Amino acid sequence: MRALISVNVRTVNPRRVARQVARVTLKPIYKMYERLLEKAVREGPIPEHVGIIMDGNRRFAREMGLDPWEGHRFGADKLEDVLEWCWDVGVRAVTVYALSTENLRRPKEELRRLFDLMEERFNKLAESERIHRRQVAVRAVGRLHLLPARVRRAIKRAEKLTRRYSKRFLNVAVAYGGRQEIIDAVRAIAHDVKDGKLDPEEIDEDTFRRYVYVGDLPDPELIIRTSGEERLSNFLLWYSAYSELYFVDVYWPEFRKIDLLRAIREFQRRERRFGR
Image (cartoon, rainbow, N blue to C red; front, side):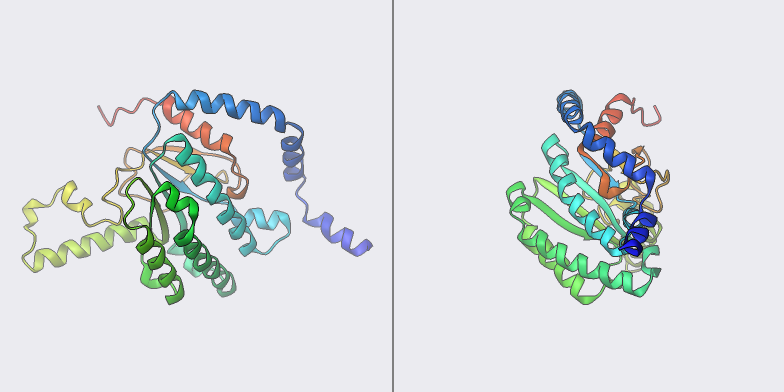
């Protein structure tokens, strides 16, 4: 028993424990604040498209004394909540960063577990009552050929069963990199120019938009990143020229509705001039 207690104590992060105690103690106050904040947010402009860098799953797992892939499972559960919060407040499109091309270099066991989770969750999206009730079109974007066949099959199933929807949109960036997306678009344009399908003099931003992964949606007005890191990490580079960036110092599995509402409130406070 002494050994077990010793191990558990070593895995505890005092800062995290203090944070959790504060949340439990102040929960009634937080709920009241959340209601007031949501009321205020609903009175202002709501971003149509929000990008989210879901960062901190592995660090969350480490502080909990869990394997890295368990952090990804907590993160996948959190995404379900956050999507509901976004749609409730009026956001139409959400693009989430689930797996970068750089992440594909992680240990094989972690990737295997992550692919298991992706297969499971895309199949769940295909059958989700909430997805169909909300009329959400699900799409995966990235270099999908780098994924295992079983994950690609689950993705195609979710896309096929939600393709007819146009009320809301969920883009899952997987095996994705912003630079790689631009390279893929340039390569496709070059092929069309070579085949005589496209005149080089006709290439402009609107033309280029037809070749990127999610060019059929408006650019994300707001991009949120969790875990305290303050960079885009190769996410939505083409689309983020005028996006408002918001960084929050909580791991993704601990992200709260209050955090989302604060991000939207900060978006509403900023003056978007687009260079004018």
